Amino acid sequence: MDCKNINLTHEESLAIITINRPPVNAFNEEVIVELNSLLDYLEESEQVRAIIITGSGKAFVAGADISGFLKMGEADADAFIAEGQKLFNRIETYPKIVIAAVNGICLGGGCEMAMACDLRFAAESVKFGQPEINLGLIPGWGGTQRLPSLIGKTKAMEFLLTGSTFTSQEALSLGLVNKVFADSALIEESKKIAARLALQPPLAIKAIKELLSNGHASDFTRGLNREREAFVSLLQTEDAQEGIKAFLDKKKPVFKGK
Image 1 (cartoon, rainbow, N blue to C red):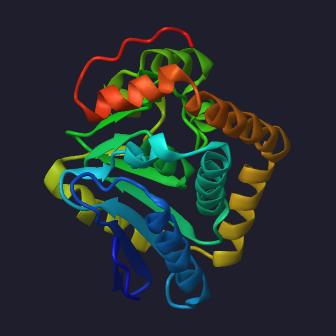
Image 2: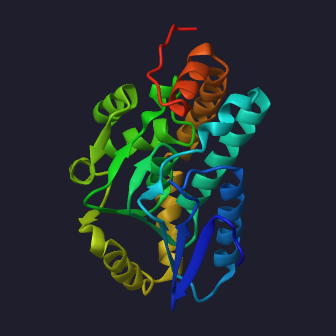
């Protein structure tokens, strides 16, 4: 398939999706559309049994492209967040195995996408984080819901409130990632595991994913709705506008609680 921001390669029963939107593979509406199209295509493939999602260059995904946030009204923001939530929910419930091979910067929406994958493998040098609070915002694509589910409320609260980053080894100890590999070995090791999992029975895999996802679906859906509403509301505030402008201008924001 011909995509502007994503590369797709095949190796027998394995498909590798590489986000390729320099310089940091930030998500915009175009990336969401392309990723959905690729998932449509791969879902129909009888040969593909497992998918690896990774990034090009020094980034996995550094988050959403916030350069467009300042122009978003409430309706635009709500649609953008809803589409991202829908995409990551789809990844979480996808009928085939989806592995995040986190090769580089993994912040904001990148961390949220990784959390939606079935398994997460990280390179040693990777830094994770949900830094949205530094913009006067909150995660909008599942971060407030999936992070505490994976690492516990106490540590999730710390990272969400401080916006600080944490290393691959910290992510491993917290249970956010399954394995950590040397930077140079990440993709090959991820491919080995994916190839082994691709031999597992597809119907059993689908059932396991459905059971694990549906166990918290009702409360999770309500949580996502509240998250989206809060994000859209915050984006209209003076603090968020200040945080985004300061980030784009590479300055320190001054928040006033307005």
